[in-house]
Length: 122
Image (cartoon, rainbow, N blue to C red; front, top):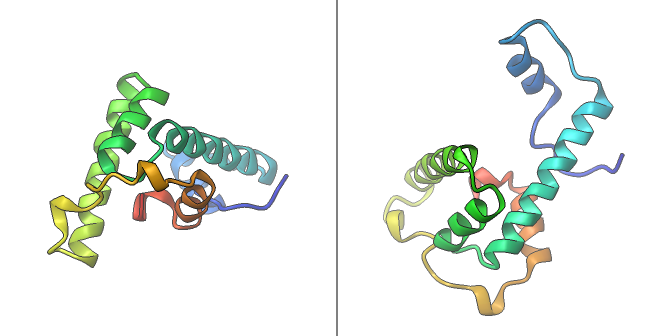
């Protein structure tokens, strides 16, 4: 499997899964899960064609138009607010509001988001 960003570490996966029952993921399974998350991120960015938060919301709901998508959106908004409170409280609510769709480069956005672990930047 290709080496790429790891959204879920082996330790985190063990902790999450152990809430249900004692279990450990093998490296190949963890790599497959992280590749799936890469693909999911790429599809969201492709649907949004922007890093503006409104377009990312629409992109996420376009890719995952279910209750799970709505729940993911709520969690992402909480994470984003916490990020801005920690890093730039003055920017706050206006963060990510600008429309960059005309100059959007999906490869660059994917690289930035995947190496920054999407919840921190995108």
